[in-house]
Length: 552
Image (cartoon, one colour):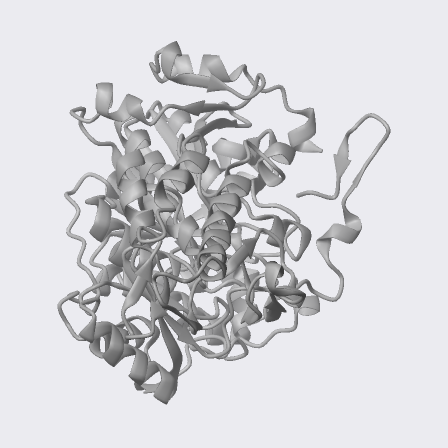
């Protein structure tokens, strides 16, 4: 309701306040626009960079943490303090929108608008990414049907189709059924679009030519000699780039308080790298004094990938990190059922706090970045609970800022904003978790030990075989994208808090050469989620006036 009742400013006013010339603005109605990526090279690249602020969180819980809400509210608060701030965040996937979350555009008085558009079709970017992905899949199977000049081994096809929806029925399928004109019968499957390599490529590309080069490097299969077959060999990259040409332009919208926001690209952080596009982040860094961006899920997933993948490839360096937590979520980590989270429970809070402390230590001692903890305030939080969290954080040299941006918008984030300004004064001393020149096995072991706190890694025979294969093909020096559950520091979603004495299980390694990383599949994580027993879609509706309800 809050978003629907808000009076947004025309998007050209928002763009004008940033100084963006009209020739680079492409309107999609009155409240959203695309900004031509050529603007960066034409006018922005030599400007000084903004202070880059990364917002991350503890491991997510059913209690909710509000990371996106804090991201938006913090930028609003910075503007209230007369700092020119911008937001860069991910586009929501239709999978979570209709599955669990019901939307992903912030909440309360810290939202980006138009909320319904952003959560649904927006400007069509995700559809374009799905189309580019499936064009490549179609060209691959057509090549095999038309004589298979590249001698593709149909048992070693690695590229899958994509759809932006949670649909477990499509995880494993058999296609090509029918007569000879209907293709070659083979086992196939779909990934959700936001877990696809095309999405990762899209978000990590610096410009249209870089995009095209990355697309060409995508490995789609192996030939009968065991050599990789790429999208470039299928001559698919040009047509794929043509489908993505307009999608590559960042989407400009605004918060409820008129803070400019780029919402662009949306890879999952538990199965992809979980960061919005490099193009949007870099452009925003030239248009503002403070660029507030978020990485998906907890600091063990999104933030680690932000550092080890996005920053490594783009040259971006955060000046400060905000770690979002709630008292309720920490009590949940301490073993309290969701129904009882409103009751004071210092004992459970004490048990749950180590999850927060683990993430703080990762940020400050592994990534070597200054951090502040943002406690997203709930009415049920007691003074004793807040004091306990504050004291524990201070022992690690990290301040706590009580934040109420959901209920109060930017005004509820001013304490957090002041701490972020203070932290941002210094130069970034960021360090990567591992050296890419290490063997693949050692890179995975470094993440498991240094970030998750694991005692070691157990590699399945398939994973060991694939590591050996990838290193022999010359891909051993790529960074690693860990595909792991978001709910735990381990690969077991049920182990909450700060587990000790565990090992990470890696069942397979896949190569996303176009994106520029290797994917390590941990535990039972998969690239096509399913809908829950009661999907959010059941509560979403539209009335006779076209007003949507149930999105939040």
